[in-house]
Length: 252
Ligand SMILES: NC(=O)c1ccc[n+]([C@@H]2O[C@H](COP(=O)([O-])OP(=O)(O)OC[C@H]3O[C@@H](n4cnc5c(N)ncnc54)[C@H](O)[C@@H]3O)[C@@H](O)[C@H]2O)c1
Image 1 (cartoon, rainbow, N blue to C red):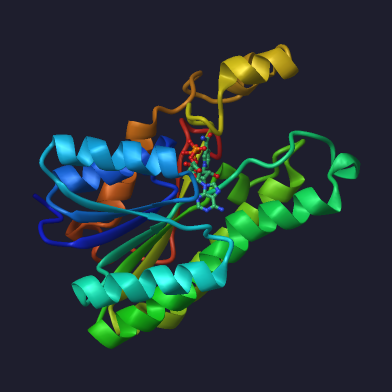
Image 2: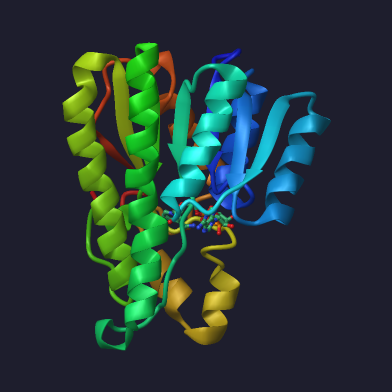
């Protein structure tokens, strides 16, 4: 029960990595606030928490809106009085096209959902963590935050921004008992990265992507979440400002 009685916020918890994380933290004793723009997905995660007898709440929030995130955090503080751990995890892939073919609207959307949301979240969460004397923030970046990824320029820009914000904020608040890290997964099989669907639009690409990973396979969300649990645990008490790759060796 590593996270017994901890108040843990997980954005994008209606699917994929966020869903697996919400369930894993709940199994370790946390009260989990499930946040997602997708009501159906969020409620499904909540139902899974209830089935294992865990404590959880669902909030429908668009993380790309500062006002919505602010209202959500105010609600958490009013109800629980604190926020121990925040996982800023919600994200979208954006278009899989060459740079010249990305529309301005697509660019703005990817930056808003993947990068601005993390700034909004951290701005609000750090304010609260300063008041309560500490906390832990974990942002979901990607290997696309550590290296280039052809056909994903907007996504790559957004994830490099997440890594840069993570490192900077970690340095700023290291003395205030706030640890801030990022997790950088390689392709992980979820709704966002579905190799079968990708094969249909870009035949041969999933196999090519897999071949470039030294372990020759994609990640399972559980493997990403295991690293997340460690980064948020006491075992990582001296770890801050890191962008940890969980990538089968691809960035080695
Ligand atoms: N799957 C991968 O290959 C992979 C690799 C590296 C990083 N990531 C990152 O992991 C995170 C989770 O992705 P996933 O693979 O679990 O995808 P997913 O699509 O399964 O889950 C993402 C969740 O975020 C939610 N979401 C999207 N926009 C939102 C918004 N504006 N407000 C609130 N919620 C919103 C979605 O509804 C969805 O439930 C993302 O940040 C993604 O960029 C994924």
